[in-house]
Length: 270
Image 1 (tube, helix red, strand yellow):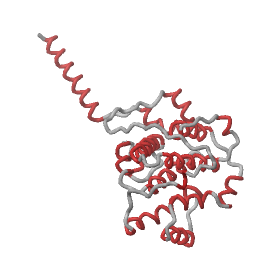
Image 2 (image 1 turned 90 degrees about the vertical axis):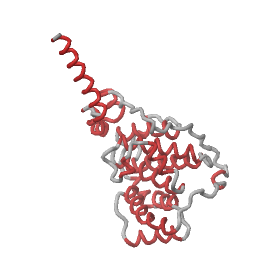
Image 3 (image 1 turned 180 degrees about the vertical axis):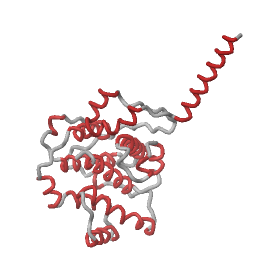
Image 4 (image 1 turned 45 degrees about the horizontal axis):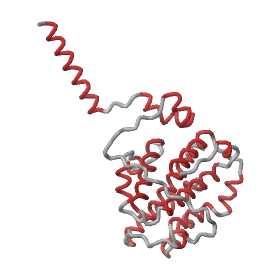
C-alpha cells in the first residue's frame, strides 16, 4: 500500500511539473545566449555550437509564400505599370508618421542624426507628393553615401552570413561567401535593401502574399536581433501580428519598415 501511495505521489508531481513547464514556457539557457553567440560567431557556427534554433509551433505562424521572379530585363517597363495603392491614410494620419520616418531612415543609412534643415527639406518633398522610397534613394545614391561606400569598411563574417541567408530566403537567390570578401558594408546593405524593394514590387497586385513575406521576414528579424528593436511591434516575434499590421497600412509603409529593418540589422554587425 505504501509503495502504491509513493507511486501515485510521484506521478502527480510529474504531471504537475509538466503542466507548470507548459504554462511558464521555460527558455533553455542556450536559447537565452543564442543572440549573443550569433552576434559573435555568426549563424553557421552558432548552429554548430548549440544547434539550430527550435521552431515554436503556433497557429499564429505565417508561412513564407512563393517568392516572385525578379525581372532581369533592363528594358522592362513593368516598373512604370504600378497600380494605385488600395490603402490610403488621410493627410493628418500620414503626417504624424513622416517626421519619425525621416529621422529613422536618415539615421540607419547615414548613422548620424539629421539637422533641422535636412528634416524640413525632406518633409517638404513628402508633402508635395514625394514617396518614402524616394527619400531613401536620395540618401543612398548621393555623393555622401558614395563616400561612405568608398572607405575601407569590409563586411564582417557575421554580416556576410546574414546577407547570404537573407538573400536566399527572402530574395530567392544564392550568393557565394567569396563574392563578399573585401566588399564595403555600406554597399552590401544598400544592395540587399534594393533587392528587397524589388521583391515587394514583384508581388504586384498580390497583396496577400506580400503581407505574408513581410510578416515572416519581420518575425525572423525580431527573433535574430531581439535586443536591437525599441518598438513593441518590431520586437514581436509572432508573424501573424506583423501580417495584421501590414494589412492596414499603405505599401510605402511596408517598404519603409523593410528598409529600416535591413539597414538596422546590418548596422548591428559593423
